[in-house]
Amino acid sequence: MMDVAAILAAARRARAAYVIDPAHSRAAFEALGCSWIGQYRDGDSQAVLSRDAAGSVYLSISGTRFSAGKFGDLFDDIDVVAVDLGGGVQVTRGAYAGCAEIWAWATSLVPAGTVWNVEGHSLGGWRTSYTPLFVPAAQIGAMHAFEPPKGANLAYYQRYAAELANLVIVGNGADVWFGYPRLDSRWIHRPGPMLHLFDGGSRIIDTAAWPGGLDFGDHDIDLVVGRLTAAMSASAVAILPAASPSGDADLQMPAQGF
Image (cartoon, rainbow, N blue to C red):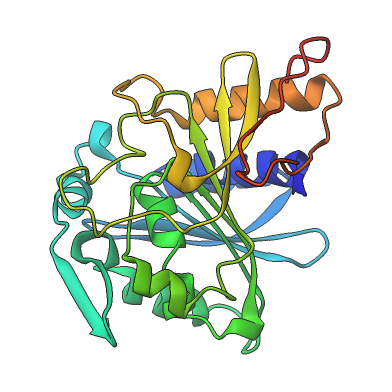
């Protein structure tokens, strides 16, 4: 079962993670009901650590800050050279680069044994899928990747199948970047269900069934938040898994707008 309320909350934090000015970043997370613990920022990475009223800890990783002139982020997007982690496991170098620094910073600010809830959009979602490389399985909580490119090979997802089983992957419309990188077939999304949002509805499909697309406009966390907000406003509080073996189920509910 995919909980739309939880997905929407994660999407809003993922959107807030883009805010660069620390004071404005704090205000954005506080507006979401979170206590702002701190912000990590360097030439190719940005993330915010926060805690909600129940004590849950969130690491929200920013996507590419290209519009803010952070070209290091863009270079990470472009660098899809394989990094071999042993046993045939491979990840893309650009997105992987910098993760160790983010996690070293984050773990220094909270108690040992903290359960980590991780989310991000685009490059941030890409990096979210690498959480098992930095966090013990027992400390992995919820993970949400919004419009992430393809970040690893099949061997990676096989090795970390248990850790990534609850990773919620959200694609939107005909987003051009969800299918990136396109020219190297080794790079895939985690096999299994994903939520595909589109204008007026949604469906749950297997990531391998992603229909593709070349729409730059659909790669937009504001649009993702808007479509999830519309679903919540229509009281569509949960999306049921597909009944068909293929996992491809149209879950439009015209009367409710989702």
